[in-house]
Length: 71
Image (cartoon, rainbow, N blue to C red; front, side):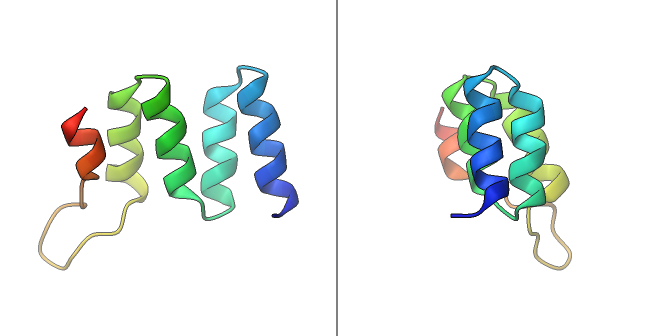
């Protein structure tokens, strides 16, 4: 565990969800940021993160997380 992860967890507990998600992304933990938003039922924000920061294949758009599509 690193300090950035711990700071993100504390921010999420304080209700600073956007800041926590940005901190997760900074720490290369996109999956944690997406999980944060899906647990809050903020699916649009989770999809936006995937579109902006997700990995994509050449010639295609960003890969969508199947868990978000199911929800």
